[in-house]
Image (cartoon, rainbow, N blue to C red; front, top):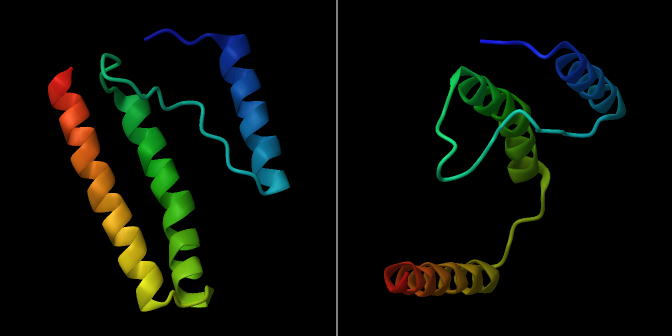
Length: 92
C-alpha cells in the first residue's frame, strides 16, 4: 500500500474543514461495479454509518409524520420504479 502524501494530507485538511463547517463530504468511497472493495471502502462505509444513522434517527423522531396517502404514493412509486429498472436491466 502506498500513501500519496499531498493527496492524503489535502483530503485530511478538507475533511477537517468540512467537519468544522457542519457539512458532510465523502470522497474516500469509490463506488462502481468494477472498483471492488478494500479496507478503505469498509472504513468509509463505517464512517458514513456513524455520521448518518444518528441524523436519520433524529429526523424520524423530530420530523413531521407523513400521511397514509403520502406513504401509499411513495410506496407505489418505488415499487413501480423497481419493476421498470428490473426490465431495463434484463434488456441490457
